[in-house]
Image 1 (cartoon, rainbow, N blue to C red):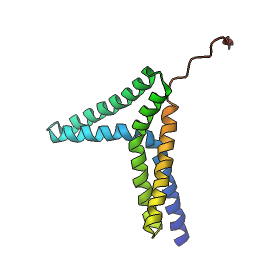
Image 2: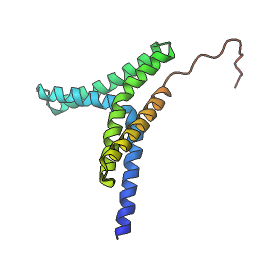
Image 3: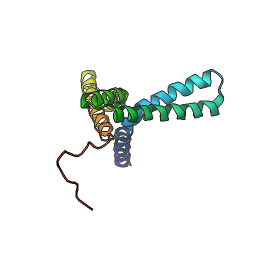
Image 4: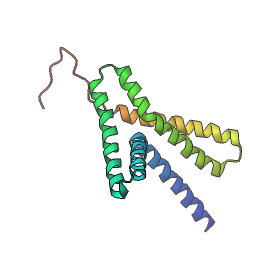
Length: 148
């Protein structure tokens, strides 16, 4: 029974890590949704109004990101936008890794070291996934496109 609990705990941690890496791209839209939804609820919009405004804020944040990647021509500007968009993912990765590591490791300096490594891994994953969302670059001049 104890072995089953250990295996189930490891499987749960693996699922949470997979979920963290998969949803890291949406940390900033989620934060915007929570901020706008909380503000709307506090000002008297009710639950339905808060949910609606949170959904609009999420869509607007992600649409702004897509628009900036579409409009900006320089790659370094696109990278800055992607880094700004991935910064909340890095913070979330740090805290998620720290929470997991605190359950398994007694040494506080090593907890922080592993949390920083987890934050870097989540941040790199988020930036990579965000940069893959950019539009394909123009074909090189002088090349003739081939027919399908």
